[in-house]
Amino acid sequence: MRRFFEAVARRAAALALVAGLAAAGLPAAAQDAATSWPTRPVTLIVPFVAGGPIDVIARVQAQRLGEILGQTVIVENVGGGGGALGAQRIARGTPDGYTFVMGNVGTHAYHPTLYAKPLYDPVTDFAPVGLTTESARLLVARKTLPVDDLKGFAAYVKANHAGMSFGSGGLGSATHVPCLLVNQAIGATVTHVPYRGAAPAMQDVIGGRIDYMCDSIQTALPQVKEKNVKALAVLAPTRSPILPDVPTATEAGLPGVEANAWNAIFLPKGTPDAIVRKLAAAVAQTLDDPLVRKRLDELGLSIVPPERRGPEVLAAYVKEEIARWAPPIQAAGLKVE
Image 1 (cartoon, one colour):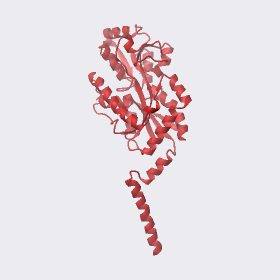
Image 2 (cartoon, rainbow, N blue to C red; image 1 turned 180 degrees about the vertical axis):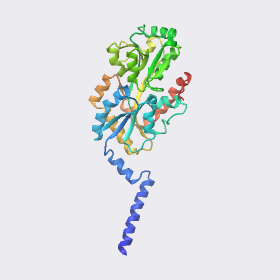
Image 3 (cartoon, rainbow, N blue to C red; image 1 turned 30 degrees about the vertical axis):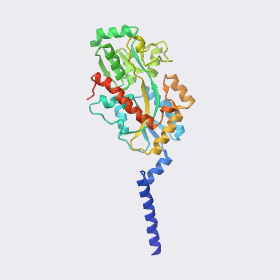
Image 4 (tube, rainbow, N blue to C red; image 1 turned 60 degrees about the vertical axis):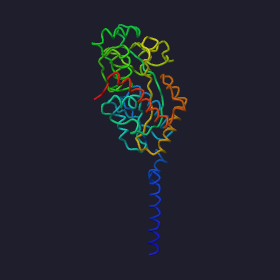
């Protein structure tokens, strides 16, 4: 009988411990999981098709990130909806740290204003991990378009907009809204052709099936160098060191047309803070790796400095970016039903 009561007492003590941990905000099993995470491969969702700018950036960082975490980082492309479908998967995902997304200005700043019925709330449906890189958009046109600079492009679009088209990586993507700013500055309405990623859109610019697009500078660069497309303007405050001869839109006659894009890592909401912090530290370490930095520099990307990394900075930045992009999206009358 004594042994029976001792066993009951031990069980009660164990239950009390679990209850105490749960009351502290994290079950014992979850605490153990957070401490040992990751114990198996993790998946980085790229919310666009393979070959696009975000895909290139993700794959540059994934291998080193996996080495730091001690597990393979699997890059999975989930295209569609200008990145919204891939981001939605994380917003609805299991908060265990094993699946996260490389979001960007399109998925987390344009989305809530652009969509009549947003698929998720960028502020409340994610656990921010940290900003990673930033890059300029580059206005490129098919090589057969009879213009050589932005001034000539603007005049041509004004005169021929009814029969023209521009492409993007999808409605609301970071290659869509910048071109809308260009069109708005020119004062023309041009047919938009959305693709499931920036890469197929670029292929159709090269093939002459659409007239222009606003691609990321890093993925447009090879096509510019091969003279497959014409680079007309950098949509940024300053020229890019990888295309120093291409003027900014302001220099070329469209003042204020700036659309720098950013990329960041997000986990599902409710992910244990210990996992969020561990992943944030690993991402920061990846960005400081000399080989990763060299590759990202070659692509024309700016790596965010240490003081702009981390969950708290990203959480505040997403709110600021939503507020920044809402007015131009609304002024353009954009709405995805």
